[in-house]
Amino acid sequence: MIASPWRFGALFSALLLLSACVTINVYFPTVAAERAADRIIDDVWGPEAQQRSNPPEEEGEPQSQRLERQDQPMAMRVLNRVVPTAHAQADLEVETPRIRELTSRMRDRHSDLRAHYESGAIGLTNDGLLSIRDQSAIPLADRNRVRNLVEQDNNDRRALYREIAEANNRPDWEGDIRRTFTERWQSRLPDGWYYQDSRGNWRQK
Image (cartoon, rainbow, N blue to C red):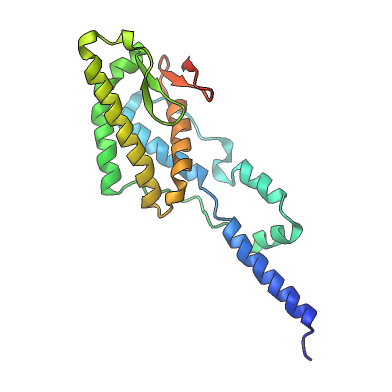
């Protein structure tokens, strides 16, 4: 029996939907990025980094992705059960020589910056960098040196976010990785240190 044109059309539409599902399901692996950020923060800050647990969604799909799926057409949701999500929450690659080099420099530099975190002279910005918050808290003779340390650390932070994205063959993830690190730096911040909220206001942990 010859299949009707309608059936060919339905099959073609189903294949298009299947292809669309594979594309749509390439999500940014938030939980894996949080784990990667925590590993690097532990390395850079050491035991003083406060231990904060990941959100309860760690064992499954992030809520934002679940809500996005609920808004999809029924056919798309059915196919999502057949086609596995492409972003399986495996660990991100953060062990390249370049990433280890950047992390090592940040760790060594942190021993010089720690006292200025504690005094409130410097703090974490809301875009994953450092900033001098209160120059008057830095002795006059040390101000140029601290400015240079902050600039060097910011250069390494930018390079780190970019390198992690490239090491995982997803340069388009750089912004997401930077946002994830910003959240984790602030979450792991020791008490008494300063950070910027989403509006750029300084707050003390």
